[in-house]
Image: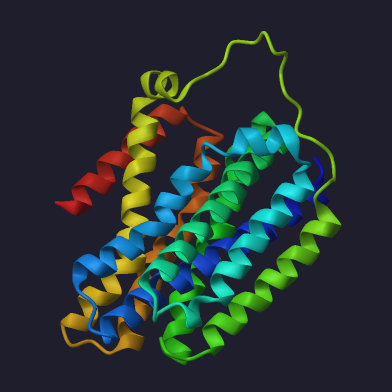
Length: 280
């Protein structure tokens, strides 16, 4: 296993998690304080997710024409720019929406390729643990985002400054750890696997990803707004999000360990049933 590349990918996805965890509630809370409607907040909160969806259609073209290091540098550069300009974008809704969309595109490409490369690096006997480590790095730093808001406040410049500095470190790490080679492609005659084909082959997996994405966006963007509207202080509302994400982080490695030792479809089904029962 290429441990240097793995370390670089883990660090990179940690920064993605931190910026997502910090900026989603930050934007929502600032818009709430500015008197924005819930529809306005909801639409802008959905912009990063829309960018991530858009990124899925860009990944293949990027891999065909750019090296791995270049793709990652461009993706993280776009994210860094989108975060660094947030403070100047609240006066113009279109600019804020464009920045959030761009951040989603950059994050989406980084997450899709990072997860693919980590999966490629890991061996079958420990793939569950390695992928769980990747998810733990993402969720653990995502959890720190609301904590920064609780410590500094939603209107403090320090949140954006710290996240921007972390992106600078990520760019340096990418140069050092990610190889400057092209992603290997199959032969042109190979049968392609379309999005529709994937939906038919793995509908349960698609629904699980959809549920997790919805949960993530609601918790980070709208839960702080909900808590603030129920008379909780901003710091307390942010810490509530941190508590929820802590559970997400703590169970990644145990579930990854189980995935290496039992039938993965059964584990997926059990997790889905437990989540449904908790929701009831």
